Image 1 (tube, rainbow, N blue to C red):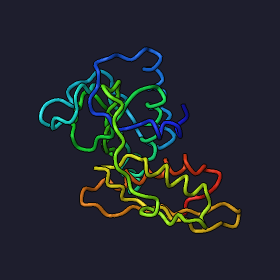
Image 2 (tube, rainbow, N blue to C red):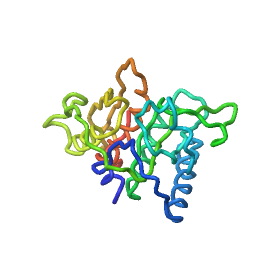
Image 3 (cartoon, one colour):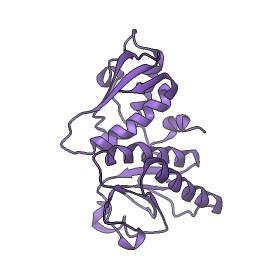
Image 4 (spheres, rainbow, N blue to C red):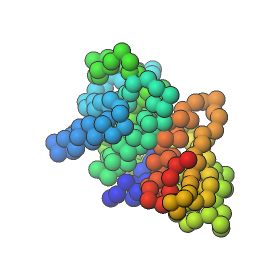
Length: 228
């Protein structure tokens, strides 16, 4: 399964089995966290077998059986949230290729200081819970391509394919506050695409935009366009 294939298989899951991972999967998870940290200039930390973060009132009864998660950490900067979304979704889709389920988590968890290391100039943005889900999750209602883009019969097919992949991106409260605009071709013949986030009283739109941009790239093909 490729990351693009995983887009169509992956759904948010909040209820997990207490089933341990094979040794090779634990190794792959650690390696992937290191790779993503280096690629995205982040400090992604893997936590296995920790049950406190999703226990008690902080979980609001929404999560059950969570004891494995990635802590998404980075140095404070204006683009941190968007990078967390973009590179974090690479982790989420990678988990799906391993047969694991996952869920982005913004607030409904509690920090367990013994489970991570944090430098003075870093912050925890969110976590990604994962494991063997009791179900595979369900698909949520999504917007149409015309609601989030200027896709038409005049725009390239790769652009519509990118928008369709972006519409399957997970967003906070399924708000989908993002848009993509095809702006013609550049001097090198590649398409020019602008990605923008909308306003939401719930926040998280920078993370959501980063997630949607990765989906767009996987659907459209990075060789076909450049971001404006």
